[in-house]
Each structure stands twice: as C-alpha cells, then as structure tokens.
Image (cartoon, rainbow, N blue to C red; front, side, top):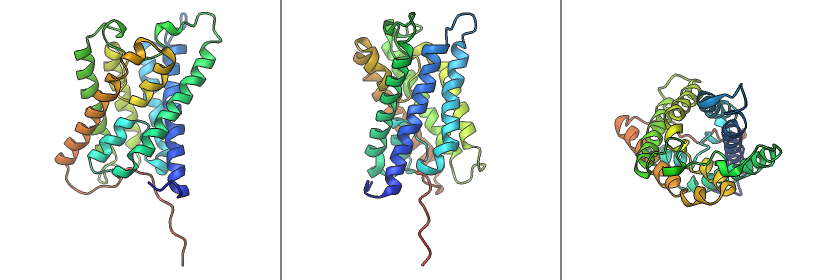
Length: 250
C-alpha cells in the first residue's frame, strides 16, 4: 500500500475509526451496561451491540475501506483472494491503533464509577479460570477458530458479486451477533485480535498472558474461512477494499 496516496491514507483512517467504534461500543456494552442494576442488557444485549457496531460501520465506511475492523478479517479476505496481500499490514496496524484508543477512552469513562474494578476483566478475553464458563484453553482455541472461520465464510458470501446488493452489512452484523451468543460463555468472544488487544492492555496480568490465543486462533480461522469460500465459489467477485475515487476526466 502506498501511504503517499491520499485514498490509501483515508482507507487506513476509516479502519481505525471503525475498529474504535467496534471496541468502544461493543466492549463498552459489556463493561458499562451488561450488569447495570435491574435493567442490565446481559449476554443478548452485548451480542447485539457487537453486531450493531459492524452493521453501522459497514454502511458508514464500507465504501471507503471495505470495513474489515479486524486483523482476522483482513487476513481471511487476503487468503480468499479478495484483498491485496501488500495492504494487510497497514490495515492491521490501523485496526490495533483504533482498538487501543477505544479501550483508553472506555477506561477513562469506566473509572469514573466507584463500582468499577478493572480486575473483573474489562471485557478482556480469556480461557480457563478467566473464561466466563471456565472453559479450557483447548475449548477456547477450537471455538475461536471455528467462529472466526464461519464469520469469514459469511463475509465472503455476503460481499460476493452475485449476492443481493446492499444487504451485506445486515448479514455480517447478524452473523457477528450470533457468534457472540455462542462465544461469550466460552472466551468472552474475540474472533478479532485488535478488539482483544485493546482491553488486554488495560486489564494487564492474565489478560496479556492469554492474549496469544486471541491472535493465533482468529487468524487461523480467518484464513481457513477465506480459503474454504474461495474453493467453494471460484467465480470472480469484487475486492473488499472500498471504492477508489474515479479518475478525473481528460
């Protein structure tokens, strides 16, 4: 990616903003609203929040960057032949920066409550004693691989050239909602290394120690999903990179 090209800079900034929104609103729903006395949104609400972040951002920035918001999605789309491999690193760096800024903003807000305790996890992902359901490392690894693989399968299909036009954000957002409904009890649901990294930096300790799984498993799952869909549907389809501005008329 040529970062001297203003369009490419805009793509990276869009990815940073989109990943900020996913991390801030998704993790924020878990940290601030999930267990709020009497009217907490619970597991279903948090799942919907994550799905809605992707749905809203897909409509907002999909035409700019393709709205990946997730290193595993970027790697998976590249593995599936739908994203240039040379653009992976700039996208991933932008996504991580967005997630870390979001976690910092969320931490600044959450610490304003006398009941906030970062030791409770700060929406970080974990396995074993730090899994909401105390699932083992192996269970967490398998779940993250399978859930990310299916997420990429949904994305590849929903953005295919022959898919119904304009509905991809809805399918992808609902897909992420379903993934969280399954995955929250197991690992607090990552399927996104950037989303995992932001909160882990502030939770520290065990969250940083277990962060490796939430990079390796989603990246493997993303690549598998991209490759599987590419094998299943070999017909050419559009790149998921946003739309480049038209060249000026001669």
